[in-house]
Length: 386
Image (cartoon, rainbow, N blue to C red; front, side, top):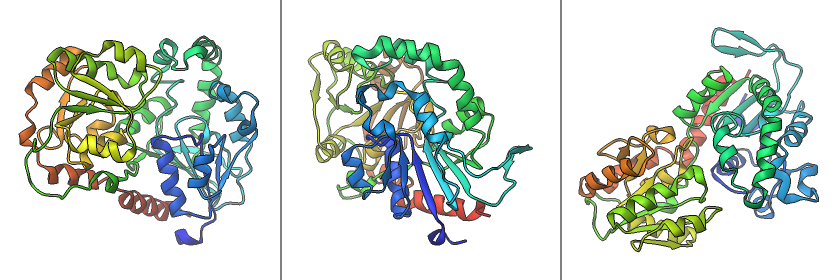
C-alpha cells in the first residue's frame, strides 16, 4: 500500500513547542490531511499545523497552568480516542500519547518482535524517551520539578501517582506494533524500561536555517571567539556547569534562552559570561561566530547540538545520551567524561578549535536533515504495513 493512499492519524502528547513538536510538524508535512490528536495545543501551533489539531477537554481546562500536573487525565483521554477507522496511527510520545488503543489486537512476544493478529490499523510509536518523570529522571523531578511556585504540588503528585502511572505507562508501551527511537540512547532506554526493541530514526533538524555561511574547508577559529550555550534554563540542562567552568577560566560565554533557573544562573556567572535573548536568526549568528557550542546535559537526542554543527560549529558535549550519535572526537567535537565543573574545565583547557573544519561539521549535520527523516519514516512504513 502506497503511503499516499493511507488514511493516517497522528497523535502527540501536547503541542506547545520543543524538539518533539518538530517531529510532529514533519509528520504533518508528510501526511498533510492527517488529523493531529493532542491533549492541548497553542494557537501558534494550530496555525503551523494548518488547523489539523484535534484537542480534548484539557484544551479549555479552567486551570491551564495546572495541565502539566494531570498525566492521569491525559492518559485517560488518549486511551479513549477512537482511531479504528485509520489505516495507520503514528503516535509521537515522550509521555502519554502512546496510551492510545487501536483495534482489538492481542499482542504476543515472539523472540524480540511483537506481531499483530489483525490487519489494521497499524500503530507505530515514535518514542522521544520513556516518560522521564516515571523512569530515568524520577528522582531528579522530585528534587527540581521546574514549576516554580507549584513545585510542592508537583512533588506531591509524583509521589502519589508514580506507582500506578508507571504500571499504566509500561502496559501502554506494549500496545504499538512497532517502536521507533529518536537515538541509540533512547533505544537502550526503551529496552531497559519497556523490554522492547526499537528502530532508530533520528528526529528532523532544520539544518538550512543554521547553514547560511558558505561551506568550505577553512579551519576554526576564523572570525570566531568564545563559546555559546542555549536552551530552556532548567536544572537537568546543566547550564550551571558551562557557566561555572567558563567563569573559572575567564572564557567568553554567551548564554541564550530563559527558564526557571535564569536568576540563579545569573548569580553564578562571572564577568566573562553574558546573557542574551535571541531570535532564531540571532541564534544562528551566535552559533556561527562561536568557537564551540557547549552541551552539558544528558539529552535523549539534542536537536540544538546538531543545529550548532549545521552552523559549522563544533560541540563540546557530556559523553552520554544522544550526543553519542553525532559527536566524533576531533571531527565534530569533543567529550567531557563527567557532569562536573572540573571535567568540563579540563575539556575546555585542551580544546583545540583550529583542528575542526566547517565542511566536515556541516556534512555531519546534513545526515539529520528533514529529507533524511522523511525517507527513513516512509521506508519504515512501507516495510511494515500489512
